[in-house]
Image (cartoon, rainbow, N blue to C red; front, side, top):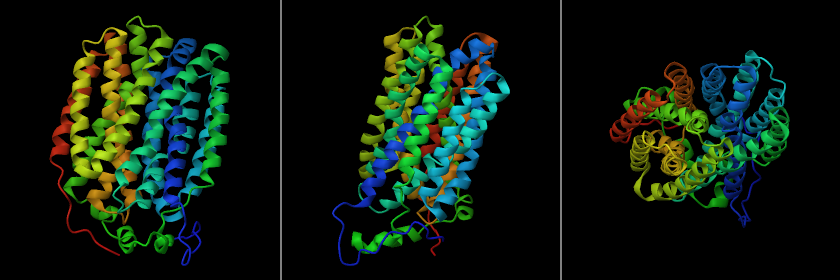
Length: 416
């Protein structure tokens, strides 16, 4: 293991503040930027497709390419994070993402959005979520607050969803979409590159500061990636989360244009992200807290149940207040599933290769996320309605309930 982010020895002085809490705060901030900018795609969707005459399926394709590529790269960045630590990985994330959003302001042809968003921004995003959540999980490997800490860190995505898409909508209406992308690009560069410099690797080196002899052991126990993928639980979890990715991004990319199609003004429709993001924050923190007491599997099952209820309601939701109910329930369930991803991987497979195993699981999620938007866009292009797409999402939600109910603890993990 390359130790280029080691922390100083603290044999004699116990720090007043455990640095793990700083890591949680930095992860929250970075996730705010990552999640917030991710869901601006739905806000930029209408002006881009309208100005250039692109179909919804073609426009969604750039987002799907982005999902597929950055999901695949999570396997690589998860392993890099295990070996090099989060500072290097996150710095690359900020650089690529910032440049990508700046280039988006120059978009004038469909191939450019596929290159700038689908490739360059995707490369940047791959250095974000998995390295951040794996790092937080490692800092709190056997801490009773692990679920809560991961929940708080990923709650940044929900807060970003509340803030950034409505802000982007205001920027677009005031200055146009080109200038809006420039503002977002500069913001991403400054915030992510700055936050990355304070990130530090998992705290094997401050064992004496924590006075916890079990902590180092937690870093060494569990399965390698090769061992994990031979387990039935790995594929049950991956299949459930594939469906989650599909239905999640089908909604996130198309919910605003769906609401506009129901006669709701664009500015009002964009406000759905505020409620959805706010409820996802509540779900991430509260369900992360509950998971520390009930286990993560119960949270995954319950979250899929709520998603099924939300999609059932969506078929009759034709007014804004009804869409708000959908956004509230869906957002809460979405938050619970996100908060449980990293801890349930640790529960099932240990911490030995947590980053790369989480990277593979999240890459599976993003493969589903790549399918969802194009599927929903193609359904609308061919039928003039999203109903069939919602049925598909409902089926995957029910499948998620069944698959997560079948999850049981894994035994027999190797040790270093």
